[in-house]
Image (cartoon, rainbow, N blue to C red; front, top):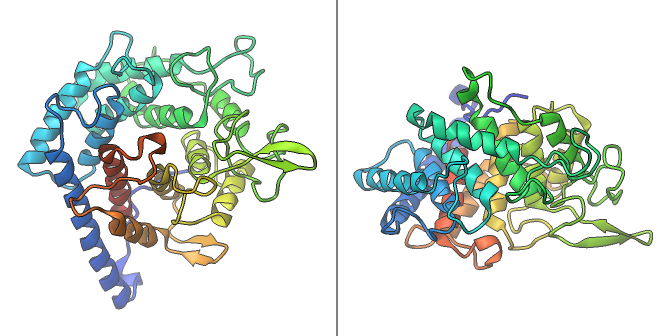
Length: 370
C-alpha cells in the first residue's frame, strides 16, 4: 500500500466553482497555520522547550509542525533552532530522548520524528541510536521468539517487560517507518519484527476472524481498543460476557499502524477497521470518548485517511469530503490568539502547546491534499 500524503489536485477535472472554493479554503488554511506558528514562536520557553521540560515530545511535535510549514519567518527559524538545541540536550547514551520523568518510548518516538523532519544528515547517528532503542523495546512476554501472548509484538511506555498498548505502538511504528531510509547503508541495524507487530495489532481489533478473544458486537466490529485487556471507552455486555468497546482515535491508530506494517488495502483486517471508521465518522467528538482526546483524534484521522489515499469518505450519512470538513472544524475552533486547546484535559489536551501542534500538523496535511 502506497502512502500518498501529497495528493495532487487536477484542476482541469474540477469545476470552476469548486476550484474557487478550494482556493478560498486554502487561503484560510494557510492563515490558520500562520497564526498557529506565530503563537508557538511567541510562547516558547527560555530553555527552548514548549510546555514542560519533563516531556520533550511536546517540543518535538512543535518542531515537526514548524517543519511542515512551506516557509518560516525569522522568529520561527530562531524558535526552531532553540527547539532542536533543547531536544538534543535530552538525548541519552542509550539512544533515548526524554526528560527523566517517564514515558520514555513516547518521548523517544516523537523526538525521533522531529530529528527526521529536520532533513539534516548530521542527525543520522542520533536517529540510528533512537531506532535501535525502540526496536529493542518490542514486547516479548512469553517464550522468547514465540508469539505466545496477546501483547507480544507491540511497544509499551519504556520497558520491554511491561504490557504494550496501541498508542505507544503507533508512535514507535511511525518513527521507525519514517526513519527507515537512514538504515540503507547500515546492514548491521536490526529492524523491528513487523510480523510480530501485526500480531499485537490484530489482538487489539474487534475482529473474531483474527482475534478470538475480541468481541463480536456488530456495533464495534472492526474497531480497535487500547490493548487486549483494556479499552479507554469502557465495556459492553454481550450475551452475558464483557466486551471491550472500540473508539475513534485508537481505531484510526489501528488503520495507520496496519499501513506502516505494509498490509494491503484488500486485507480483511484493513477493510474491517476502515468500515468501522466509515460507520462511526464524526467531527463532533472522538467516537466512544466524547471530547476526550479530540485533537489527537483529528490528528490521527488526517494521517490515516491521507495515508490510505481517500479523498471522499463514504459514511452512514453519505459521502463526505473529509478534508474540507475537518479543515473548517479546526479553523472554527482556533482561539483569537492563534492557539488551540481542548476544554477537556484528558491526555494533556488543555495544554495549548500540545494541541496547537496537533492542529497545525493536521491542517498542514489537509493543505497538501486540497
